Length: 434
Image (cartoon, rainbow, N blue to C red; front, side):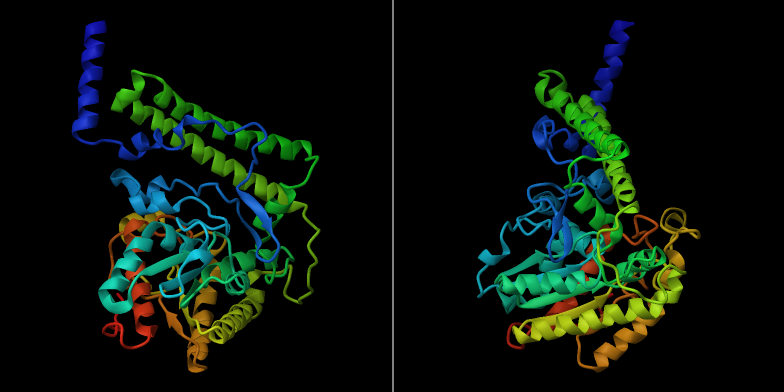
């Protein structure tokens, strides 16, 4: 029996190595070195930020996103850009102010879809830009996007970047969804959509306070326990002489570590919702539509989005920065993409709470965006960027893309950036960005 068991384990080990099975799980045991969170370490990656509401804690890491990379494993670009820099954004560039003014510096602003674009497919964007404008020289993508951001947070992020001396040449604002979905959710709760998203702002503020309630303490403990469990699974692989050399063992331990990380992230989001439920310390503004259906506040949401874009354009122009406003694609936009059978199961939810306001609001954004373009603002509607792509691209029922979708979007954004660069550094980009 023992011999047979060893033989089976040996064959499984050979299969894992020879067929390169479970690369994402095996790689998870090599991240972080198996070091458990230090005693007294902050429970949340969110920290209060005086102008943008909140940011990510410098030195922390973004989510692992195994569902994006699948069996191919995380890319080198993602690994390099997953860490949070001193500006509070995920980027391999620790301090954007150190970039040379002679380089081509592209700032990317927006919410989680823009952040994904920077962290997952920023290399694709830069490669496509180099192909379209080979004479443009060294180009850098600086990430000012963050999950949960909505206007006017992008406006404040741009103003902050310019005030601090970041040498931007192009400011790309990729947004639209959060302004409707998150702004609408806050409006339904009686919270003015001008302010940062209530749940994340409240979590950043409340987690920095002393003397949590019993419920908050229990939720905090759950986050820490799952993080420590993930670290212990990694530690087994890194500290055990035999198990650390067996790829089958690394795969099993890695799957356990990734599962624990997922539970920690879920517990942190639940904690944020609990904290925000009683948060009353932010001054609110009255509006007749607040507290009712999100659709009642659509005019307010759309005008706030458009006015913030106008101000971004004005601020950028004052500093000689080219401004590009891109309306992000979404699976709930009619005709935006032929949905695959897989996407209909995993990326479309008929009962999603944000679907009604998004479906009703996007036509308004498109019309308002066309008016912005008529004013001379660099607005481009990218809702049809996937119109010729029936393959699965969306990874969830909200708005987020997988690796393939991010790469297609990256090439489209690069084409638009190339089109606004000054003449003399390469041929003009084609207007067809599909």
